[in-house]
Each structure stands twice: as C-alpha cells, then as structure tokens.
Length: 182
Image (cartoon, rainbow, N blue to C red):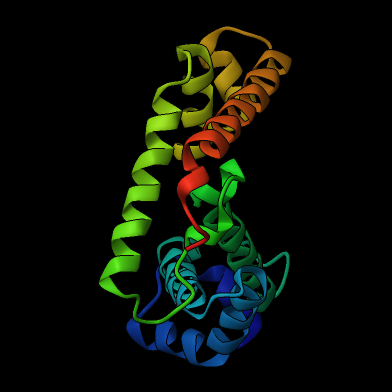
C-alpha cells in the first residue's frame, strides 16, 4: 500500500496488517532489542507495537511515515517495559534476573526468596514512603499524578521516593548480606 493511504484508514484488514508486519517487523524488533538488550522482551514489544498499531490505525495522521510512527510506538513501548521492571526501577539488584536459559531449581528458589525479602523490605517502609514507591514503581504513575493523588507537592513526592529507595537499599544491604549474587 502506498504510504499516503495509511493515514486514511479507519480500520486495518488482516491483509494490510500482515503487510505492515512483514515490511516493518524487523525494524520494530531491532529498536526494541537495542533498547532492552533482550530478545524475549524485543519479541513481546514487537507484538505489542503491532497490536497497538492495529487498534489505533485510525489515529495515524500521516505527519510522519508509517515506519516512523511504528518505530516511535516501539521506542515508547520499550521505555515503558524498562520502567515497569520493579527491581531495575528501585535500582537495588539488577543481578536477580537469571542469566541462564534454564535456571536450576536451587537458583529459582534463591531468586524467589530474594524477591520475597525485597517485598518485605518495601512493606516495612512507613506508609508515606511505601505508597509513593509503589505508585511510582509498581503502577507507573508519573510524579505529578502522585502529587495530585496524595495532595502534596511534586518535590515532596521526589523526596519521599528517594528516601524510600534509600531505606529499602539499606534494609536490603543489612538483611540481604547473606545472599550471594545469584
């Protein structure tokens, strides 16, 4: 299909969807992989991008090429995927994720125990720190929305978020000292 015709679609047929995926699928996957450094995440992101494009083709305004539009969706989706990773967001233990393709039963138990201990640390925080951390990290709410929800300033939210991370890191360092790097 000609590039100019994409902006006039209100819905996408299966055939056009297949064409879009065949023509731009590798480009979308490459952007996702470069941003996440994970083949599995790149696969998931590529699927999400094309599902999003399928559902929202009527919102494509043609201000850019269809490829640029898809790559923008891919970039935003990859960034959102990175933000949703609780452990990377809290910046405590990027090493918890298993590097091997088939972790041993022992490794899986150790990872689950470490995750459980981290959640226990989060749950020990005072409510004002715990709620900010969970709203921002777990539910991906922007600081401005959290501030509005809690009826505090955005600066207060930033301060509480920083203090929450520090407290969890200290607790993890003390309690998790017995853990070896998984």
